[in-house]
Length: 88
Image 1 (cartoon, rainbow, N blue to C red):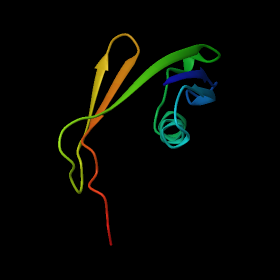
Image 2 (image 1 turned 90 degrees about the horizontal axis):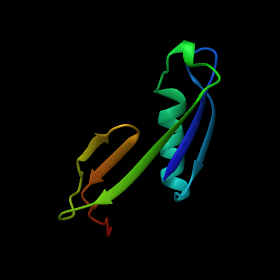
Image 3 (image 1 turned 135 degrees about the vertical axis):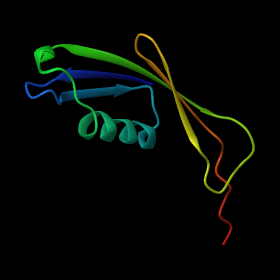
């Protein structure tokens, strides 16, 4: 998945464009990039490209852990185990 963030004047995301992702993943990334991420105010008007890779590995768990690895300069690899299905 690719996200391009245009940095706003206050150091927050001004515009976010996401491509190559399922809508649920895209919305999760949009929430983080919009609300929980800040940028240098001096970068206002500039664009930042971020690449996200999502992987499921290992045996299913009820509450799977999530691991995030950063691969410079702009890649994030998010790894989790599958969630066990709730059959109730």
